[in-house]
Figure: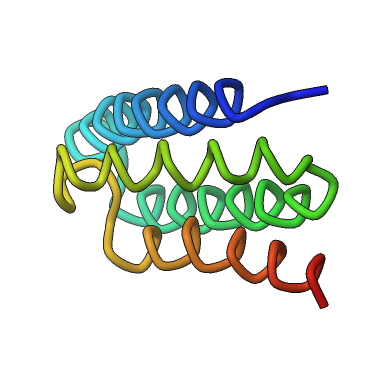
Length: 104
């Protein structure tokens, strides 16, 4: 069963790999492809985020707590350079909502 440490690790790797992917793909799209591809890429990114957030209801409570801790630490360290404000709202708001639903 995943624990807090696993949640922190997943949050950390998700943000770092997501940032690297965004920087690389957006750089390639900006310099080599038409601008429409950037919009398509951003739409696909949002769809991936939705699927991740939909899976959170199946995560253990300790794992979600670790995820929240990891996201909070990464945001405190990097500000909005790695995670956008609206993404942070989703990444922190939905797990809190899932935890509140479990209590009620």
